[in-house]
Every structure is written in structure tokens, then in C-alpha cells.
Image (tube, rainbow, N blue to C red; front, side, top):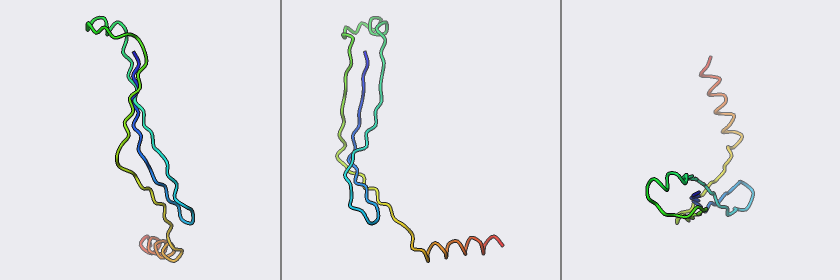
Length: 84
């Protein structure tokens, strides 16, 4: 017996200067049960494949952002100034 468990999470992906995209993240786990295990436990399940889906009710929002050039330069100078 093979069992697959799928979790589906709605995701919104935002990048600077582009429109937001709606996507889905999917994670999968699998479980294999040998026939000998089923027989020794007294379970009379037939061999086969089963799928279980779980749609999560929350949405993940991933937002990419960029630093201003002046903020980047200020942080670089502060790192270099701290080293010396």
C-alpha cells in the first residue's frame, strides 16, 4: 500500500515593478506499507495507491523589495568604517 499526502498552500508573490502572481506551494510526503506488515497486523486492506489532499485556508504573501542605492552605500561605508 502506498499513501501520498499532499498539502497545498495558496501563495501571492510580489516583485518590484511587476504585477503580483498567485501561485500554489505543494509539499508531499509518502508512506509505503509492505504487504507483510498488513498481514501480520490483521489489516485486510487491498494493495493500492491512495492520495490525500489538504488545502490550507491561509495564504502566504511573499514580497520582494530592494534597497535604495543611498541606503546600500551607507550600510557599506558603515561596515568598512567599523572594520578599520
